[in-house]
Length: 180
Image (cartoon, rainbow, N blue to C red; front, side, top):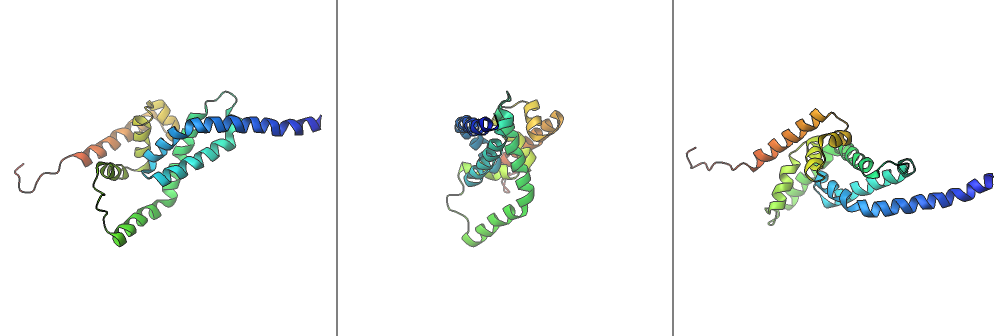
């Protein structure tokens, strides 16, 4: 009987691996979109998506028992993003400054996408995550609260403050020569 378990183990693992591969292929685009909204950079989004898929793959055997894997993946991604921001915050703030100082501003850097990225970069990580989950994935407060590990009231506060910061960044600046 012990031999049967050993023989069935790899076959079962392969079946689980195939199920995970199919799920990851289908969910990969959604995860990458969320990661890009969180990080603002394509390379960082790809890394975050890959790290998330690795974590979900390791936990796959626990998730197949009826639990929908995408909420788990979403929560894992948000946690990885927030923990990575804490861990590498100083480095992430220094590198762009050093690159700008050594290379100077890019001539094409003033397109609308660059402006949107600059606005999103102003948001603290939890506010950015809450705004991305609300408006990119169209999640309600309970789902965002589950992903962020906070209360629904905190979610509403993060979204409200994040939107206020974004609106303030979009407000036209008065021309110094004009009367108010």
